[in-house]
Length: 482
Image (cartoon, rainbow, N blue to C red; front, side, top):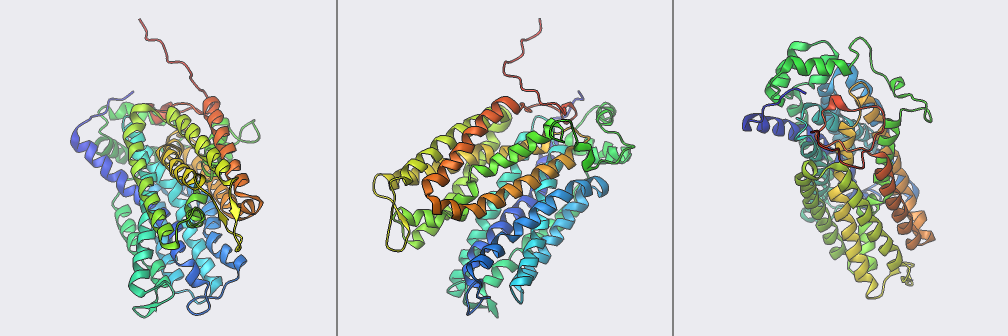
């Protein structure tokens, strides 16, 4: 292993670079959440497009299609052109989507612009964790990788806050403001962080591992010295070169293996992504207002609780950042799985005591309404402190250098596909019954525990060059050598 300097100057620089890269995660969260405040207004007859229920739902979820496509292609493009150009391209896509959605003439071009924004979200979801992992010292990689999830939840919070502020100033999302309907300004507001992200991305150093792959050794040496603080640069470059075939262009074909067509480590990444979504976290955020109203809160109170929940998510993500390099990824995921299983399972039990009112809405009697409220927040805490940030950390670091970008792209695409499935099936699940819906998510939370226990290896403190294509889980600590 090559020694790494630990001066405060180097630490400050790599932290600053990682925060800048994580701005892609901020736009990721902002873009996926901003439509929440606008959807009812743009679906109306007076200020919107008079959408039916089906078209309204597709207008909301259409961005997820772009997310999956953007994630799928981001890895190969990043290997061909570099990490930084893909970040800049994502910023341009965010900018085009924000302005295009805000000035849309009808639902068709609105959907097109939302899909364009999805391309940017998908690309950012791949590039930011990969880039942060590749420029971070091993001792700090978990904390810095967690910045991606922190940026995502902050983006969600700022989107919800800006939506609420614009609606309040205008007197409603469907009201006129500065010559346009307020819901249009909600989309256009994203242009500001998109421009900032693009400008900052242009000033970031390229990934040293990408530069070594391209044979640009002098530039890679400079980044390793000035950013990561590597002391023995030659030894580090030799180590990187040993894990990268610089004469071979990486492609998705490199992910092929004997087990169901893919390498084992790729399947681990895919299943981590799927489990992260199949526990139903987006149901809590997308449908939380309905949940809180079912336990007796009014609409305004329900919206306030939703904002408070997003703040809670930010706080527990910060807790994860403080713990991940001390405790380790694997044990935190296991604890998160247990906590999510118990909280979701209890919610399923609580809703089994629900009754339908005249309008067909579920209402809960005491004490089950309070139990559901507590468990929903407990679920957000367990997810936000473990599976939310740590899946992104693992996806950024767990793959070998030779397949990292491509494998991360496939895993991220799987995550967006799982997100789309969970988000679109919840209304159907809730028609069967909320106990079934939350029981479904609790079942997958339980499965996630056994998956991590048997298949997810600890990566804390390991150099990226030590990552293997095999799945090896050490359940007992190594004995110290005499």
